[in-house]
Length: 126
Length: 126
DNA sequence: TTATATTTGCAACTTAGTCGCATTAATTAT
DNA sequence: ATAATTAATGCGACTAAGTTGCAAATATAA
Ligand SMILES: [Zn+2]
Ligand SMILES: [Zn+2]
Ligand SMILES: [Zn+2]
Ligand SMILES: [Zn+2]
Image (cartoon, rainbow over all chains, first blue to last red; front, side):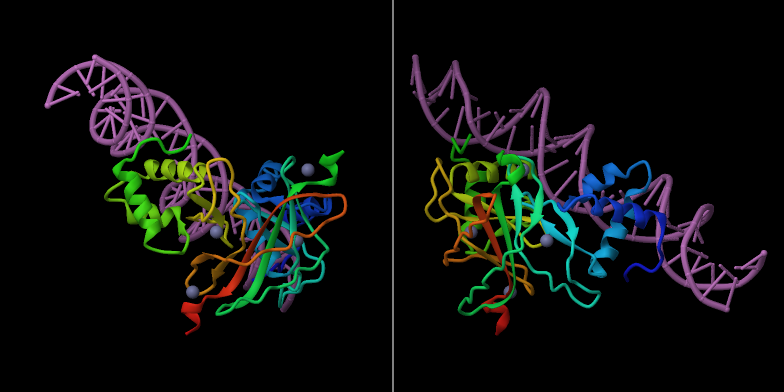
């Protein structure tokens, strides 16, 4: 159930993600594109792009979902499993290129690990 | 702004958390106590218990907030910083007694690390 | 250009969470 | 024990995020 047709709405959404390396929250995206795209459409496009391995969702520290570009994922699977950093000052989330060691836990079968690091980003530190 | 008076509603909420080691979502708590406590009251009590270091909030994989008992926190600070495990089958979140190594990241000031491990819990593996 | 199937906009809806305010109940003082 | 004080509660109204069905629009294939 991914993207089939190259529509104007799709282009606008993709443009938004090409303007920044940071993740974008659905709410912000809906606000930014309010005059051009209906919110239902935005939600639907984000879902499809996630299915296609173009975007991945990140849950921020307050439980707010944001989306960011994938680097090496496909329709088949999201291989792109990395930690994220969220700044306490500006709120922005960025993907991190470091790897996480998946801990083993007795009696549990570990599947995926979500790591969200909180702090101050390079922009805000200056 | 923590708990000041020992009310019936407070007791009911505390009882709910004493019945299980797992985290409880606000929605479930509101449902379970619907006949006894108004939902506004539940939200307010959860906030206060969090301020008091009795409970801590955990954001689940879908961004849903859940609460779990703290082990060694106080009104002053939540020292209780540990990873959590969420089961893909039953959805339950449990606190983990393992420690996380906080990675250093160039140009960023790291403050807190949230680790959510997804997989199958011991109950569901049987 | 026409036919087709996907995508979109709209409106209505659901659900989580918040807020102000009058009432209730826990605690303190008498 | 009773009254006074003040925190906590219930209620209702509200906001905001996200979802859904369906008719109209638009991208693609024929
Ligand atoms: Zn920042
Ligand atoms: Zn990422
Ligand atoms: Zn389970
Ligand atoms: Zn915990």
